[in-house]
Length: 390
Image (cartoon, rainbow, N blue to C red; front, side, top):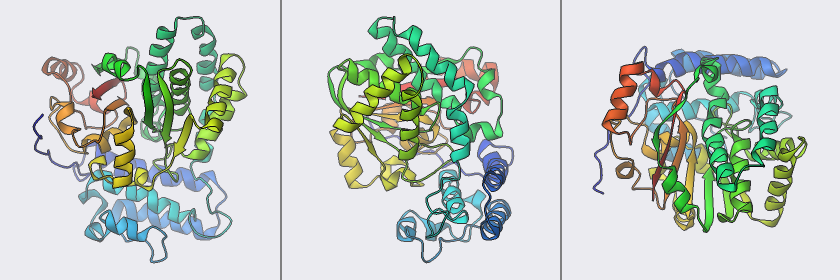
């Protein structure tokens, strides 16, 4: 398919837009929540207060000279954006840099007692231990009696709609999860997805959120391994805390323990996954590029080779979708295959819609969505998609 000319990059400088609200409202809310979630000392509290002021009214500043990843961020465009308003640079870049600076503020990377302490962990654990998670795990018992293909379909949709548990999204839009009385798929390539997962060798799954989204992702992987759909799975997570709820290796372990300690069928899934981890059928990868403020079109060669060798790569969630197709204001009817041709192998996107970026819709679907909801359908989290480029 011929290459599609790029659409305009999304910025956050338009008042009233969704990106502007994230920079102006969500990020300050996150700083305040993190500040109160731990008994941080005076130096960290001052740093958080400074970040709160800077991210809304200041300009982008370079990472400290001693930052272990300063050269990496320079390669990712830091010099080009230093001194500019957070609102006037690509939204994907400014969002990512905000979370990197937040980790600096709480001492995540610096030697000392707070090194390696996830500032978002209380929120993740609260969700993982919630009654909603109990109910979802209990539902696995009834699912166990269904035919394998019905189980597979249910687990696929659990992985897809689990993205509504995104903690960062709920910070600025509490109650969005409950509004989806009749959620609908705006694109559904699940038949193609299953055809690629028939006797496949390696599945790469690029995870998005921890907690109530990561558990369905792991359940889907367990089913695919147990029923011979795939030989092995590689779960790509973040190397450090990112976007409030994005999954790290520690979150994977927490999710496995949550499954193993649950009653009924959930515990059996937990044991299967634990075994798969120990014998190498399920591995975890935390590549530095997973936290890059860049689209996957700019991924490094080693990651490109890894995805090229996979039978299929599944890209989960809204942020990874933005990175897959480019964080641009594409016409919604732009073909999915035309924009994802850069990806080095077959790729599938499972995503609930929480930002403006969208491609691969047919004209009738777009018209129906606009007629029913205006532009709210793009960001409300009440619609989802399964898109595949084989």
